[in-house]
Length: 284
Image 1 (spheres, rainbow, N blue to C red):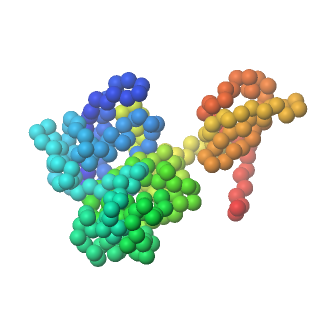
Image 2: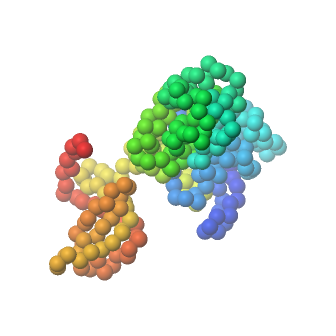
Image 3: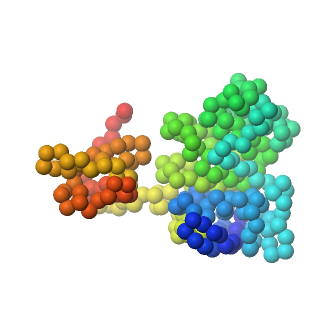
């Protein structure tokens, strides 16, 4: 059991706010941290890693990492941290990056095999693709068999195909080692695929906590569903108006009325929804 009860005053782009998080995490859980940028997600990870101070307590499997009197040094916390920018040692090979953490060649070999990197163990980071670098970063984070794996949008810089591939490998590693994991993500499909639980932060407070299905699926039995996107343009075609909306990696066209066209502004976040609709799925 990991018990978190911390608070810290933050100064963000929108002013001062209090990060107040009280959270109990079961061993082996995979939790996604979601919420708008600036809500305190990354700061929470850094506090857990001991990279930032805060008030309150953190207890991991009965060991006090932080209380009102002392704070365990980052090196003594059994933490694995996967950053967005890989943070690999450029003068070390793939295998050397792993062995720098722990001189355990058997574990390094197992991790490289699980992530399909065995053939690249002697390569230097500069010769690897973004996806390969992130896999090395993930393996390195697992080298000390962490009690807690922290991932801060680890796949955000990758293309959709590579993201899906690495999501599968992250899930495989999680099942293999059973490591308690906290991952910051803004990608609903990623959260749904990987996490058992979603904790939503807003302005430093937990505003929602539940399963991915409960948190992410906003529809009910009415058959209505909706997608959120960005309004890119409104084009007049003969006597009708067509709104062009970016939803994820797709652009869709939606017919809007004259009044709607006048009320909408380019760049707005909009919701594309329908009530009487029976969706069809087919392979692409």
